[in-house]
Amino acid sequence: MFKLKQYYNQNRKKIWTCVLLVIFLFGILQLLNYLEKNKSNTKDISNSSTNSTTITATTDKTQKKQTSAVNDYIISKNTADENEKIIKDFIEACNNGETSKAYALLSSDCKEVLYPTEEEFIKNYYRPIFAEKKICDLQSWLVDGRKYTYKVTIASDILSTGQASNSTQQTDYITIIDEEDEKKLNINSYVCRKNVKGTTTRDNIQITVNYKDVYIEYEKYNISIKNKSKNIIMLDNKENSKTIYLVDDSEVKYSAYVHEISKGLLIFKPQQKRTMNIKFNKGYETEKVIKNMHFTNVITDYEKYVEDKENYEDIKQIIVGL
Image (cartoon, rainbow, N blue to C red; front, side):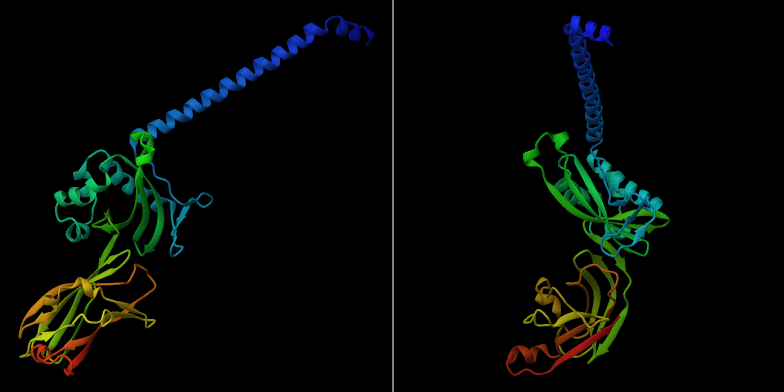
């Protein structure tokens, strides 16, 4: 023990120099490892940016499943993977300027309702959103049978454009449906078309509901009206915004967007028939069932009504069961 202490006292300076050198070299090694790891991560991000389609999803990592935000429906991992893939394929096609490929992923109803031609899709969806490359984040939003709606946040790819100050962000709701054993997309908040049938005739006025197109924020019903009477009729005088409405199974009312209907479309000559669309303020949900459609301000003799509006009383209510 004495010899060891004597050796330390005689070589103290050399010993501490070696210790400090070892600590210094160890620190340098740790720094190099950190820089190499950071370089690798940066490379991965760069590769993702080149692809310009980053998709994340709200996923239960324990169960490896997705849960829809609105109605807590659990989506299996296989279905979730398939859903993410078709949305990713659509975004990638748009990022790469492959508009024909992106358009081919849309459902027949989506094309008919929103984009009857590829040129209209390019003008009204592709160009406004994909003027630059985008990344997106998706969240399972609502499940209705075999229809899966995702909330998709589409944002500028800052790494690709290098312009953080000019970054833009948009939200779309994209619904995945089955069409002839293939998955297809309904975009721009369009959910689906549903067959809704109902017809009623009163005072020689026939109203038939043909179908409805469902959107995230509203529903649009396609209806046919035929005036079988000898008088000119008016379906509504637009003086009250709540005289045309839907009623669900809980007796909740959903008013029509009457202000969007041209007054001329509500006037029918004798024996005239017209098909028109009426939008209702009913958001997309799966629990509510619509029972009927109400027209509570039907004027059965428009000519008499014009002559004396204040004293005209021959106003009818027509209810169409759905």
